[in-house]
Structures are given as C-alpha cells and as structure tokens.
Length: 451
Image (tube, rainbow, N blue to C red):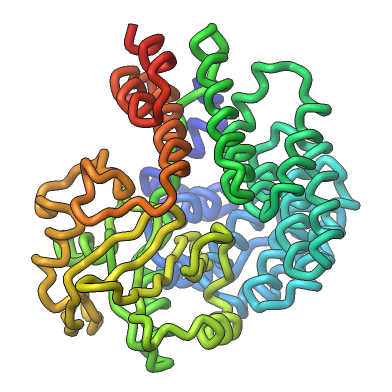
C-alpha cells in the first residue's frame, strides 16, 4: 500500500490540482508534477517563466522544477538555477546529480563525472550519485579502471536497482561478469535477495554473452518464488506515455532532417503514427531506420554529440544500432536497414526482421512532414499481421506474433522467454508465465506454475 506522501504525489501527477491552489511552493510543486507527466516541454517552460522562474527557497520544490526544466530543455533557466542551488544548498547530492546529467547532455563527461563524485562525497550512501559515477566513468576512464569502479559500486549497493542497472548495463566481457557475479554473491548471502537483483545480473550476463548464466539466474529466482519468496510487486516496463514522446520525436526529426540524414520511421513508431497519429503510449522506445547506403555511424555520433537534446544510451555490444536518450526520458533506436537476398532487414541482438524492399514517402502528421514506408499497409502487415487491432501482449521477438522475425542467436531466445516468464509471474499471470517457460525449454518450472 502506498504511503500518504506517495498518494499525494500520485494525485498531483494525475490531476491538475494546482489550478485550485493559491500561489506558493505547494502550487508550484503540484503544477510541475502534473505538467511533467502530462505536458510538453514548452508548456512546462511557459508555466515556470510565468511564475517568475524556478523557486529556490525550498530544495524539494526547486529540484522538481529544475528537473522539469531540464527535461524541457530550457537551459537558460536551468543554468542560472543550478548556480543558485549549488550556492544555497552546497550539501545537496541531488543538486550535483542533476548537474552531472546536465553536463553529460552537453558532452562534457569529465565535468559530469566530477559532479557525480562531488555528490558521492557529500553523501556516500547516495545511490544516484554512485550510479552516475559508474555511468559517466565509462565515458571518461580507461575500461579497466571503470570496471573496477563498477565492481566497487556493486559491493556498496548490491540490491539497489539504480546502481545495479548502471553497473550491469556496462558489462561487456565474460571476465567482468564473473567479477560482478562473484562480488554480488559475496555481499548478499541470503538467496531470496536475488529477487531484487536478478534482472540486472541477468542483463550483465547477456551483455557478456554468458547466456546460460543468465538463464540460470532467472531459473533460481523463479524457484525461489515458487517456494514462497516474496517478489515485491509486478515488473513494469518503461513506457513512452508521460515522457514527452512527441517532443522527443519532434527534436529527433529536426536533428536528422535538418542534417539531411535520409531516415524513416520504422517498426512500432511507424505503427503508432499510421494507426493513431502519435507514438504508441504502450511502446517503450522510438524506432527509426536508415538504409545501409546512408548509414554512417560515425557521422550520426558526431551529429548527436553536438545536440544537447540527446545523450547516447547504452546498447548491447552485439547490436549495430545507435542508442539515444532524449532529454525528456524517451529512448530512441536508430537501426541500419540492409539488403540480404530479396528482403531488407534490420537487426536486434538475437533476431532480425525482414521486409519487402520499400520506398519512403512523406506524410503530414500533426504538422510535421514525416518520412514513412510508402506502402505502409504492406510494411505493417509484414511486421504485425493485423496491425489495425491493438495487441498489448505482442512479442516482436516471437514468430508466433511477429510474422517477419528470424532468430539469429537461438540460445538467447531461451533467455528472452524465461525473462518474460519471470515478468508474467511477477504480475500473477501464471498461465502466461507457464507458456513462456515452456517456450524457454523449462517444462519442470512450467509444470510447477501450471499445476
């Protein structure tokens, strides 16, 4: 059950309560919580400017406002506010964490790392500062030094989700996975605490190519649940809804189109724009493609390194896509589309999707002149079958759902299905969990759940 504070924050986020409140810190806080979830960057910025700028008297309200301005990209307001907050609240690690992210979006990773380290010095137990030390350390430090710092962070915070994700998403070798796995088991003797860390540790295993180790982590976690251990709530994937997805899309289009990159909208984002006129709120990222002849990864990296609306996101070492993250929080994948035989493909880590070669044409959607597959019906039918009917459980990696998917790394499919089974189990969907575990080649676990 949520606490009273959590309930109030939830109300502020979901309803425009601020409109009925008198001027003051509470009204500003309520407005920014609501606008941050339900409005674009321009509306947030207008509200703050109309209110006389970011209030800095109370740290909690100032941080909510500063984070909203950061997501909106109003950097003139944010730069002044960060200077004021660092002067007024020199002991706050949260201010340093925000400063670290701000520097990172401008490509100044040494300053980002320095701010994260300052936050860690101010409060050694501040998980956000430690997570950023790991994240930005990999941008600045030699790999061996960054790996050592990641192991140290895991030892200090072995069951903290933010730190674990920062550590495990940077694991790129079998040697580093073994170090992380050994350190975690040394720090966490209680078997049931694996449930707080299994998703991150399995991600590290997958990135290192240690697929069987990842499968075994989930297998052990599922057995713990079946033996009575508490999962602690359903696993909920990140969604584009509430993250200013359309603003992210506008900024992405402006960056690529403005630089003359012949890109097009692909996969689930194409589905959303054609069917609903917007990115799907249930989707978890924005997908665009560039044909192989025009795909210049170095040029794309240079383009987005100069754009403070975007930072680079960590992607699996076995994929050629470019991962980005918009200032507002939306992840973005830029895929290379290449010809092979009679089809044009784009790859994920362990599958690829094939389409009949297609032309690209412009469509006006919400005032933007956007590039999409010319024969959208054929393209979407090849990808989704009956694409006009929403299907919340669609699995793009499973050929029972996606007509055009082709598995390129069969062992990884086992990890994919057992991960989905664990997620369904966390939601109490035992029938769906058993189905996924059967697909993963785990009949014993499937029978225990189904029985």
